[in-house]
Figure 1 (cartoon, one colour):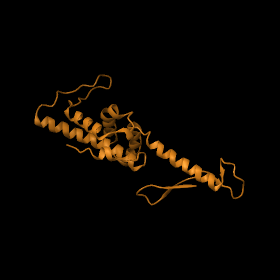
Figure 2: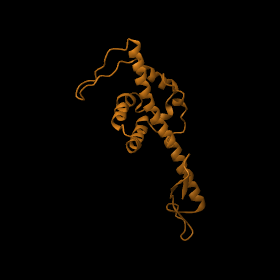
Figure 3: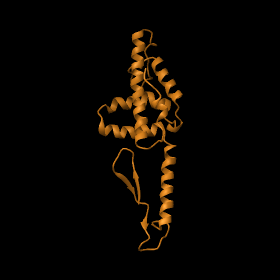
Figure 4: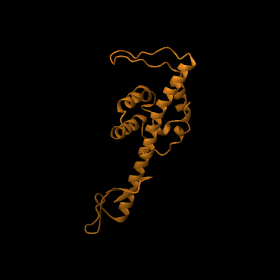
Length: 176
């Protein structure tokens, strides 16, 4: 049995990797000697660590939305934000490869871009004019900050659930 304690929780996660060779002889598959059990436990831990390097933003957003549906109310709005602004830019990107510079650049582009208009799902997306006045620019920055908050929530949830090992790249990005 492999026990893993997650950070911030008092309980262990238990994973059965095989039975002890107390009664039956070890076969190396489901009945393990102490040494074989240690090797299998190390292989399992290595696989978990390697998995964290293969987590994409899209996978993390699905994981986040599964949690979000159970614990929050604004599911549709959050899913629309993810689909419209986050996945087109970061969807297939590995979280381990995200950089602070890349996130800041995306955040700046969101604030400088024209606002999206409501449009039919059967027609092409329409946009309003580029922000000209201070009020329009402030409004676009506020929208960009809300979208950044959703991205950070997705990435923080992945970090808390040990899907990734480092949260520094997005912690450095500050709202306007």
